[in-house]
Amino acid sequence: MYLYSDVPWIPYANTDLDYYSLGYVGQTGNISTVLDQMIAADEAEIKQKLERVKKAREHYTYEGVMRQIHKFFEDPLGPQGGDLKCVTVPETAHRYSRHR
Image (cartoon, rainbow, N blue to C red; front, side, top):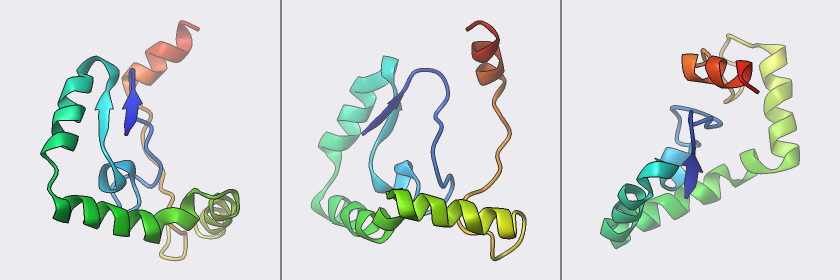
């Protein structure tokens, strides 16, 4: 389970490697919704997530992250750029950082 308070900063967004594919994601104020999703998950869904975790595990190790960063710097917008992608910083993150 990954909980966020303002903006979900999810590595490997929109891939089979992101937290949405591997587990359950929700805002801290809506934790009951995430818990309901977890409770409602059937055995097939849980097995599918576990298989994805096994495949994605390397991406979440220090070595795997460094490998992805290297690939990204070698070909940032191309097909050999790995699984990291640029995303626009949400406006709420801008507001949050200015008030710190």
